[in-house]
Length: 457
Image 1: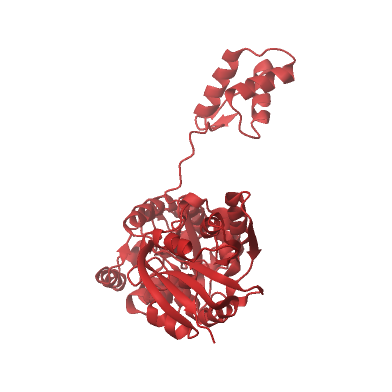
Image 2: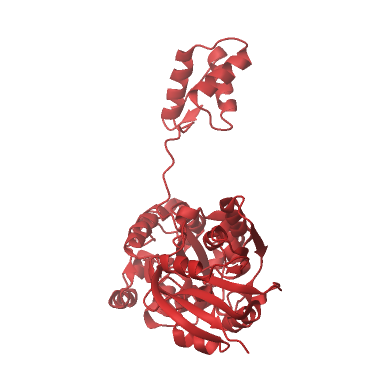
């Protein structure tokens, strides 16, 4: 057995015990499980002492790692990192940094300069992130039509690691001929730059001038560390100052910076985005989840309740409005575009008589008519270009004389939603009359409950 302090030889029963212990540790075992498994193999009881002594030796020599309590992720809600990689040799370690960022609770998108593609595998980065790796200004897909703008707006932190002398120059001068420098130029997020180059290049007046420019621009700069110049023959390499700080140091820096950066909420995009959110996020981590409806909405539901009245809960989520309405005697239909949301709502509703329907209100397949429709936080989550489709649907679904109750965030909520005003609703829904606008809160932000009545005739 070869360990950090040399080779150890095992013979006879000791060698047999060693082989058995290593074979059994193909998957993690507790001490009790190990002793039980050894006893089953040997057909009799195994003395504790030699096993404990062997385990102590194996742990000391680094052959087996005894796991401690797994560290919790630094961030319960994923933080958004754009990692820009340029053509320095440290780029070969980029997959290590990506995995580390994911381990502390970050969602990572990767952008490469043209030269960086010589040092790191695009396929490896895509396998780790489960997202496209961006390599050019004109590369695009349906969700990312303008990569340097879309990524710049998506990021909470842009990390350029490693940053070659060429990339430093582009960033410092606002040269947007390259994707990575264009992202840095366009973003309003914090930017961390980790220079990586030969010591002669790093100390040159041009590079030092660019670094000073970046400081005046408010960029965070990470000092280089010691490393080896791969341009030299392997036997001639000596430690030198200039290579980028290693992934472990970058993780510490990112972790501490993100603690200071207030998360900017970002709404999921499309059916797939909402389904991914509802299928992977516990309810207690959803900032908008509540077990009961807001008091103004509860009062409105009471005021409109009546025997046999039909109510449509738009974007039901976990079903709080649908449940509250069913308990007040409404005949409730609850719709959402995420199957996992409907599953959670059904579970919470129990035996209540609620019809749950998979539907997107902006492309609705609902054909019923309803006395009351409730939108508790749906409209303000929709892009404005989908508002007309929403308006057409609710106009068709709410009976003349029926009511539409909309709760939407107001300016200043800063929760990633689009504020909705009385003027917005008047322009969007000319067939409805605004009856009341009552202050309330939603997801901890300032909101209003708008009550609208569908005009008759």
